[in-house]
Image (tube, rainbow, N blue to C red; front, side):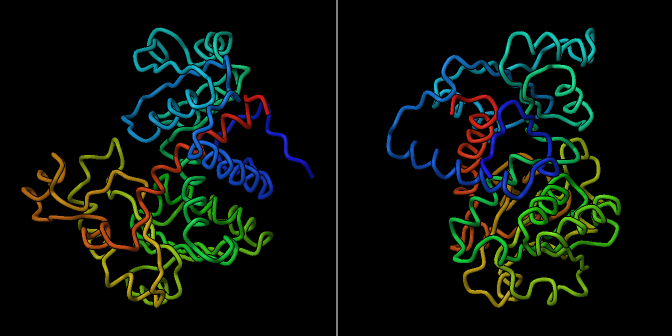
Amino acid sequence: MPVNLKGRSFLTLKDFSPAEIRYLLDLSAELKAKKRSGVKGNLLFRKNIVLIFDKASTRTRCAFEAAAWDEGGNATFLTNSQMGKKESVEDTAKVLGRMYDGIQYRGFSQKLVEDLAKFSGVPVWNGLTDEDHPTQILADLLTIEEHCSKPLNKCKLVYCGDARNNMGNALMIGCAKMGMAFVALAPKELWPNEKLTAEMKAVAAATGGSIEFFDIGSADQALKGADALYTDVWVSMGEEAKFAERIAQLEKYRVTMDFVRRTGNPDCLFLHCLPAFHDQETEVGKDIFKKHGLGEMEVSDEVFRSRHSVVFDEAENRLHTIKAVMVATIGDL
């Protein structure tokens, strides 16, 4: 059946069927080839989008802005609005919906991005919340497809670290939708919540995927046969006071070359949504080393810089997949 996403919001991959996600991935690949061939696009000509950021951003902001410009659109970067201060989310959404063709939100609350979609009357795109990160997952899936000889529904992804954060949730959702084997290698107290897990296990049962959780005591079983290892920072934005606690919980879960070898797959990929604390070349990295004696955190510098690492292809693919979401939902296809 033909896929039409015009007018749809993009809040979570739970809202999309495997066929719709497949369509977005194929469109992403087409738009990537188009950009690399030097063809100037006009699929977003005279479309105006507004980008609301309550959290810091490099890849998400740059991807949305560059994607809009690539296809003839215009972007407004908004960080100092009255939303939530002097004006309600509902009122702000109604104002922005009269001025813009689409709204991106990156911040803390999933309910806030859902309310923007409820009241604005235009497509709203989730650039990240505390619960989910769906645009990142599209980039991850496209990257795996580009580097793995297997189809997605034959791939096994192992997420190492804090599996109850937005990336753990979002990866579990994306893998379940696409029939992949998803494994979380994490302390039990940092596994995804039971409600979401049950929901995604039901999805995986229908798509041929699987969902499994292991702690470090069963690392060999978790890692065996992995096509991709994935990790994220141990402390999410807004949780900076928990570094000592997270280090104690997660130091054994650092992705190292030992983890890579234990997969038994010489072509195993390493992915990370970035930024990554793999060395001491950041203010945070220096501070962590000074306070805790760690020169690297969730991933070793050896793995990060190895042939297994596809993190910069993955980062570039944020551009192409975000462009696909915008083109599919507000563009002139």
